[in-house]
View 1: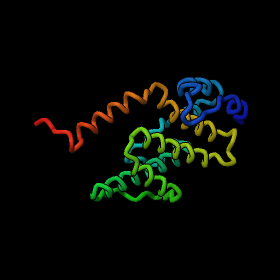
View 2: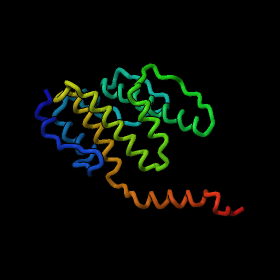
View 3: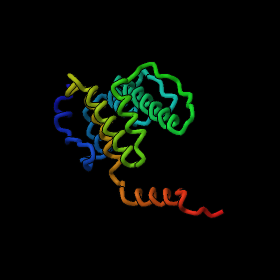
Amino acid sequence: MYCFLTASLPELTPGAPPPLTVEEFDGMCRGELSESRFAALTAFDGTVAPDFRESAELPEIYNTYGKFELYLRNRIARRRAEKAGEQLDLPDPPEYFNDYDAAAGTIAASTDPAEREEMLDKLRWNFIDEQLLCKEFSFTSLCAYRLKLLIVNKYRHRKLEPGRLNFDAALERLSPNNPREE
């Protein structure tokens, strides 16, 4: 039903500049979808609060992605807490995404925040791709495209070097070899 629209979308590649903004994508879809479908497509902005719950108003892929994101964040938070010698009491999710546990451990171990975020986004991207099996040219594929577009657009105006310089400066200030001002 959405063959022409999905086939006309520019390709998205992780790490590459996005070919359009989320707003431009939404504008393309507005005229092609019913009002209720458009509302469902734009009902999720990719952010997941700690109290995320499935919603009948959201398309299935958004609910699945929300549960995955919450699972991923809780796993990473637990691993980081354990590494710091602390216990973190987070509720167990109703679903487990076991294939991602090892990756979450690797990501949690990374000390570079920019690298960690890129690794997380690649993991998210792969998860979205898995949700598309046998669902090409469907409403689900439009939702998946929007999720991926949200990921690549995070980097649209980001300049990595100033962030790295700020991070390195903060580490330098925290270094045990650097005397602290009292």
